[in-house]
Length: 69
Image 1: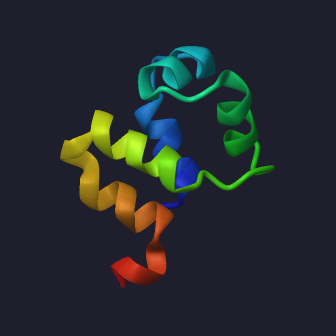
Image 2: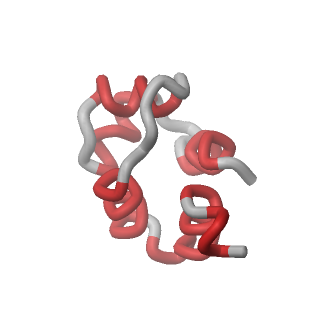
Image 3: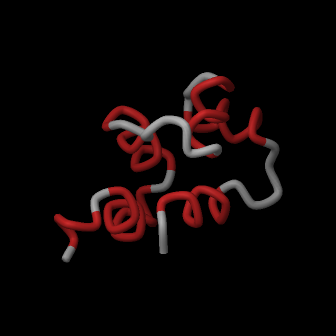
């Protein structure tokens, strides 16, 4: 699963704005990440891990595939 696939799965039922607010990032940053114009970055991933700790392995595998292999 790619990072964008995982984000879309986690966003299920939420707008981009709601998801951005849930994980604590700006709407602009969320839009750029989802469009592939910007990498998520460590802080973004850290926020995902804080909100979705039960998806830790999937998040790490999606955003850091080389380390997870």
